[in-house]
Every structure is written in structure tokens, then in C-alpha cells.
Image (cartoon, rainbow, N blue to C red; front, side):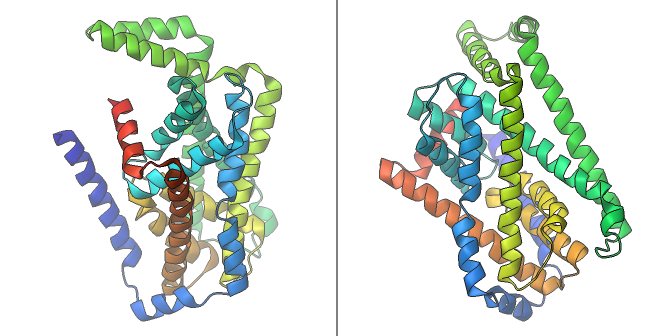
Length: 342
């Protein structure tokens, strides 16, 4: 109980710190005026595009799941993503990452550990894909240096984050591959560390570990791996497209290619485990808007508030409709995930 409260306290402090940096020196009148100063046609198009990443993620997920069960319902894959993101939007600690596989496993009668393994693979390739996209942007600097001027300090930080992200993803991928290709040794190591643990609990952990490793089956097929990489680009280019339309909604015309570093920074902010991405998303969005596009700080604050609100409201609306149809609540789903963590 004390650990839970301590964790929540730390998350709260992080959220407050980022919100302070986000709202610092803001002129509220100008910021709120910019919230409503949108092109209605582009804004409606942006609203309709909000669930696009849920669709592309559901399509991509099938290439991991089919190794355990073919013909997994597209609706269930879409619903699992929607419910998972809804939980992440409402509760701290990114619980939605755990809710998503548990939800689908129950719906499709699949092994929880296996589905959880596929979600870990998803996150690894999400980082890889965005780092690769950012790498293209960084390497291409000579081509756009004269028309897209970035502060050297900001560029250096962006380069550092890009290298750090791809290093972390590479390390995680190597560990994941070792888990799959050296299963026997992996289980020997797990058993060694489980010696002090009661038999009933250790057996359960070993069972989940085996299911998890089985979730990495797709590494055995080069064809599926290639298709999965392509679909990962579809997912993230679709997300970038959503933000590109958002800029049009504010009558700001920016080449699609120039949104790569901004979306990368949003990914960093969104990865911070605050409730609903509050704080981290806001700070990194404002930093990107001001640093990359020279957007006035008050307008950047207003745009970020709208950007975040649209995603939270639309995602939660979809998630709640799905849960309402099934006669369950967000708290019941959260409780199941917490019990699984124990």
C-alpha cells in the first residue's frame, strides 16, 4: 500500500513539474483565444482521423497474433486498443499497456502471456520506427537547412534523444531475441531466481514466462517480420498525418516531412507515465512548436491544449461506448489488470 502511494506521489510531482514548465509565463487571454481560433472544416477532418491509429494498430497486431490463433476478430483487436488507450488516458502508470493484452486474451480465449509478449514487441517496433523516421530527418539536414532553421542546441538535444531511443530499443530487441532463441537458458535463469519463491507462485510465473516467449514466434518468419515493419511505418506515418491535419486546422502550413521531429518529441512526452499523458505531452509539444516552427508561446499552449483534449475525449468516447455495449466499466477493467500484476 505504501509503495502504491509513493508511486502515485512521484507521478503527481512529475505531472505538476511539467505543467509548471508548460504554463510558465503564459498570457491566459491570448492562450484561450487561440483555442477557438480554428478552421472548422479541417478541425472536423482531424476529429474523424483521431481513431486512425487504433485501426492501423489493430491491422498490424494481426501479424503477431496469427502465430497463436488465426482469424482473431478485427473488432476485438480494435476494441482492445481503444479500451487500453482509454485506461492510459484516465489512470497513471500506463496501465492501458497491460489492459490491452488482457482484454484481447479474454475475448479470444488466448494465453495472456502470449498476447502480452506481442504488445512488448509492438512497443519495441514503435520506438524503432520513430527513431528511424527521425534518423531520416536528421541525416537529410543539408537538404532543408536553408528553409527549416532549427536552433543548434535544440537540434543537438533532438540528436541525443534519437540516439538514446534507438540504443534503448536495440538493447531491448537483443534481450527479447535472446529470450526467444535461447529459451532453455532463459528458463534456467528464471528458475534460479525463483528458488526462494513458493512453488505455486513460481509455477505461475514460469507458465506466464513461457507464454510470453511464445508471443515472439513471428521472429521466425522473415516475411512476417518485413510486413510488420512496413505496417509499423503505416501506423506512425498515419499518426504524423493526423498532426499534419491539426496544423491545417490552425491555418499553419508545414511540409509533412518537417513534422517528423515534432511527433518524435510528442512520443517522448507521451511515454512519461502521467495520467492521460498530462504534463509530459504538454511540455514537449510546446517545446517542439516553439523551437521547430517559431510558433508564439501562447498560441503553442492553446494548440497543445486542444490537441491533447481532442485525443483524450475522442479516445475515451470510443472506449466508453465499447465498454457500455459490453456492460462493464473502466474500473472493472482496471481492477483485472491490477490483479494480473500481483
